[in-house]
Length: 323
Image 1: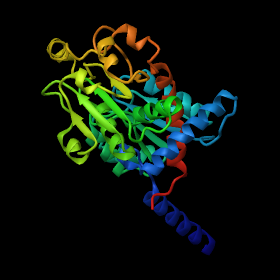
Image 2 (image 1 turned 30 degrees about the horizontal axis):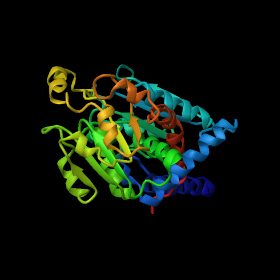
Image 3 (image 1 turned 60 degrees about the horizontal axis):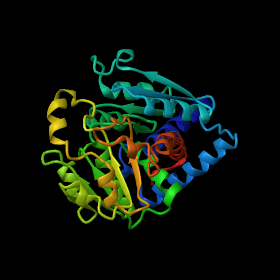
Image 4 (image 1 turned 180 degrees about the vertical axis):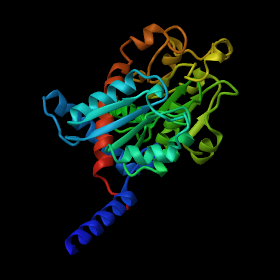
């Protein structure tokens, strides 16, 4: 009887400690600069290990649940493949597969999934829903995209830069296009890692104003893409029509018509500047074919690195203690 009571007590203590120490990744700002560099360097190491045929068993015997309320190609495949590389099983839930948004409280979903998996990976249109899930989960929750930011994309982007050019501190990055969720994550990266970010977006399409205020000193807004790209070490863009804005297609095509990353824009950047795009890309709109398929483009490395960067992130979240 005494041993049974002691066992129950230890279980409750362990469960309580686990809830206190769980780490989530909803934004780059959930990491310190040191932690971010640690993940980037580890992702490069994991990529080399994978190429050498090495496999890890971090997830062996366990599952990660992927709750996707938005469609995906790269994010879904990169997470599922990455979890498999770590020895685990990915359980994918599309909107029609779960009770999210159909009456069940988010708090209940978080509690249930926490007891059946080691991690919850969420792709949603509402950052507030994501936060509520994390507040009630006993396992790490990962932001695989929200309307506010896309921090997993930035891990891959930063890994790609480091592989090709080394340290990004003090460099100049130019964003051309919509001040969307990916742009917001680039703003956070500039603050964390100390590089300059110039954003060329049309009036009315600027990034989150509160975020811009928080990152003052690292970020500038410039309407003219030719001015914004001058002396840039890296030029980045994204589709003009993010998910959820399909009804604005005609208006956006007019508003963004002068913001195509073409040969003229790239000629203003440094001669060795790189070009990135998180994909999917629409050639002839936000980027010309000769740029995305040209020698300065690293978009295919960038896409592959989603898989390795997310493996490094998952390892970090499952082995780190929040103190």
